Image (cartoon, rainbow, N blue to C red; front, side, top):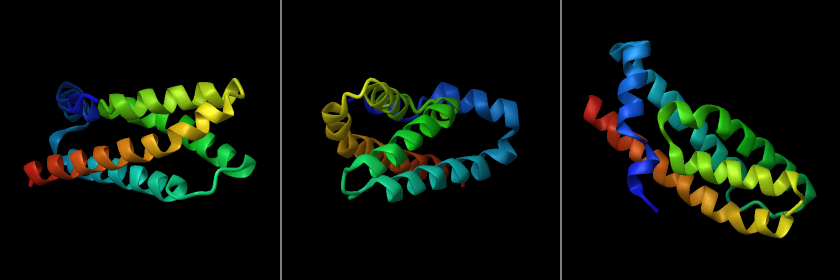
Length: 119
């Protein structure tokens, strides 16, 4: 997987221009916390009908926020899983959960690196 697509720098620069540089640390922290919350909801969960629904809602939420930060890999994985869920391709959906958590963790790490650069 292309680490560049964890957080695209041009998208971060564009977002910073829109909201102002002084707001970026707080915005990045908010996004990082959101991703950490998603990890907490998904990681290690026994896959069943109820947890699939929660994970599908999480994927839908990720699709809404991650593109704003240029988090391409997590957006793509969430989009793929959302489609699997809607198409009732549950075996494929289930197999992708661990990969989604891995991408979320790597994206959080990338956010932490970016935050360290801003301080």
